[in-house]
Image (cartoon, rainbow, N blue to C red; front, side):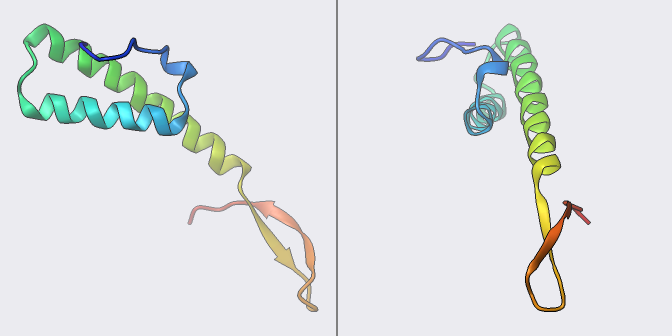
Length: 84
C-alpha cells in the first residue's frame, strides 16, 4: 500500500487511528485506482484493521458498567453493560 507515512503494526494502533486508516483504505478501494496487487494488499490490511476495531469495541463494551440506584437515588452498585 502506498502511503505518505510508514504503516504501523495494526496491534499498535488506537481504535481511532485504525478506523481512520480503514476509512482511507475503503475509499481507495472504492475509487478503483489501485492495481490488482495493491487492492489485494489493501484488502488484507483493511481486514486486519477491521478485526482490531472489533476487538477494541468488544473490550470497551466489556468495561462499560451501568450504575444501579437504590430507592433513594444513591448508587447501589454496578452491573455489566447490556447492549440490548
